[in-house]
Image 1 (cartoon, rainbow, N blue to C red):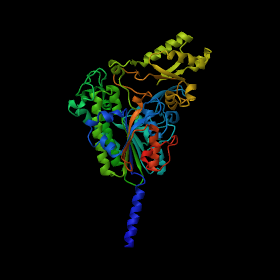
Image 2: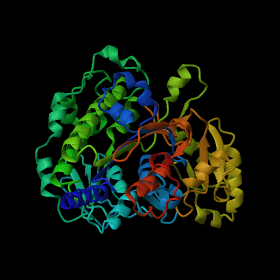
Image 3: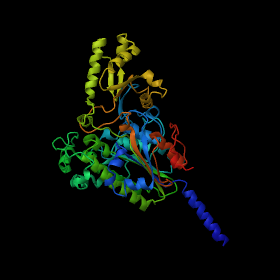
Image 4: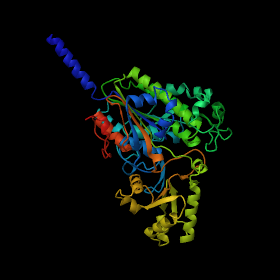
Length: 537
């Protein structure tokens, strides 16, 4: 009897120890997902995808980004570092870098080369421009590098930045239809990835074409097919279902898969294969799989938030999530994995759509803005002093200012006064104002958290709500307005209570919350504010 009691006690202790951390964390980022989509499309979702996560886990209904610009690379970096671009250094997807005097892409790294089937440029990527650690980095170190970390996405930045500096690997989609990596992670692709690529699964999706998943009457939450606010995948085809993807593939190649729901499907195929072949969640050291679904962003940019194409993409993603959850149940076990799902930013309504419905806003082409700034400069100073205008940042040419004996402070104020006369502009902030921000100015606080004085410009513009730069059809993002900042935040699985929160939360709370749940150190740049609802009393 004593032996039996001792055995049962020992077994209980082992079980408790095993449950101190999940065997596998799956971080899911849905590119350009608005929280509103979970409400708008709810009646058309199954019970086993988004709804399973929401009903069986914890939903934060009021999660927001707390900085601008709200772009993909800063979004992924902020989710995983628990801090903002002012600290982690990823201030846009690509930007003019003041320190080096040229354009910089977020994951550029000329010291590494492509492995796999992509071009040289597609694979010359690493996390070297990310200045702080990620939750995935901290997990690697906390397990003495025995817990595995793998990142994957259609986009390179969606794979690399979440995976962090110490990842076992990261994979992203190339124009050839293969998933590739870089020599930052090793000399060769694992055999299972090479085999996956050799199967050319993308052709199954391309040959099948893209038609509506459900009867057309289901899509009454969207505008009619072929509406004036959506763009095209292919210049020769109207934006009408069904899409002949094989025809577009013959003209453009495998890249077309990005702008269809099937980019998400093939990524899920790769994720499932990674769990199997890398034995994720199979030992006592927590593994982490970071999956970023990018096709929602490509579809959103092209067709816009009110298109049938976008709704169909989310209905199909709902099925994809169901497939992944069932696989996790079967291989890792229902009580052994932790899933979180959020987005790297949301997205605006199309300005022309709003204008046609009597909201006094419009689209403002960025080339027109830059042209007006340069003309103003020549008319005012006799020379073009503008070095670069991008990502709402103005950079002045210090050499020209010196040659013309122009004071930078005065030039900034003169430009600021002119820019404030423009119809679309709400605010203009100088570098000095940004760095002196106290947080009292709501919009300035967003700009300050997204600003790195070593990289950003001399002035930063903020457009009025509803105005958009760059596009006529589809949508874009980047502002501090709620339509760009309000994203889903769902937790499900290991030790996650069921519930809902409607109080406002910040995206930078995700990483430190995960640190507390996993009992590992915080990423080194985070301010450590946590989501206490997940942590118990």
